Length: 344
Length: 126
Image (cartoon, rainbow over all chains, first blue to last red; front, top):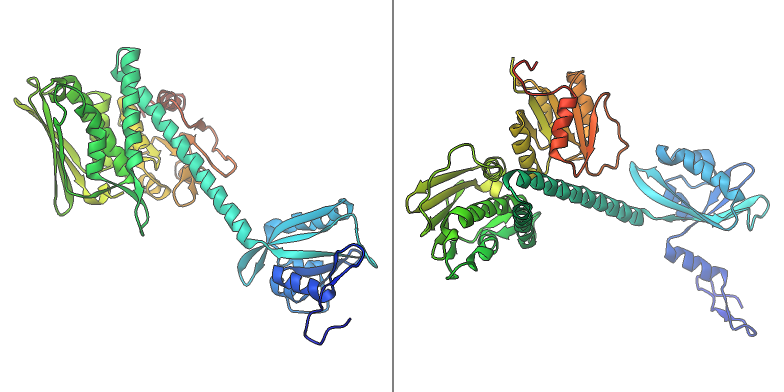
């Protein structure tokens, strides 16, 4: 049964097997819908014939046939030798083959997948047949995944390096393994809490945590100790803190709180801690006020590793400073942070 | 002639940089720091002499510690170099006589590495 010109034939069904009998028009429609380009390759003289889609895919002027060398000129230089060798090897492969490579058309790189059947299967008059597919989208997605995996690996290694560094620092500032285990765990926990609070910013690049949330979460464990809860009070305006700054602040708050717990207001059941904040044009100032603790004396010497790490971090990472006022009523710490640094 | 060697550290992980600086300064070195390739080059071309380079392999904006060390050696052919690597998609290409530590590393081992390369604080340090 023939079809009217321009109309696809109706699919006939084999009376015995019940299987559809696809006509040439059906196959052509399917090939077009799938974006497949057809090619044939003369294995003796290395000439290719392609359909219209093939020539468009390769950016070649349509002609009756092209040589492998003419096509090779469009293959990415880094893939050229591999593709040449792969095509030659297909003649000895039994079964289906798939060769992925890059071509350069109009200064753009596209990924092509050449597929066929090896071992000269289906060869007719020294010509084998196959298809080209444009797999640029898939390859770009794979490359993006690889980049992400590499970035994740780098980040994990950095975190392990940080943990290793904190272990060394903590080992120098403690005298027993119990103390070291507790201090190290608390430092790492503080960093973990800060990380939990950092969320992607809607419609913008980067992530941030709210300063008030950060301080509250980091100080919550210390508020439960002693006769009165509610002795740690946080009052700060609503402002965001960038991911890197949140990590630094977590370390700073942890060190101040740990010292307070050991020697300051939080070491007594009735001591109190007030954390307030003011925002100025270029800087944010956080004031940490301890009251009701034992009489404090300014320490002599450069301070321990934790203290030095905090002083360095405040300067280098937050563009600011830390000032300690050892008044008789209790310590007052003033943290000055550059707003631009706080947002990173 | 300063008895405190200047060590240029190139590391973009800020907290890790802080920890490194505290420990390495405590060991008697002076630390110059750079978060990326470009700032590192500014230090290498600056007034303060650089006595050693410690660089991460993976640097921001697709730069690598490999190329930074090669560039540094073109400026100071005998510069002691230590690489620290977490992950790098490139094949390694260390400059001659350099050391390489994988993350996570012990900072004390890094400091010993500086000494092994002849970089140590002291009154007669050149």
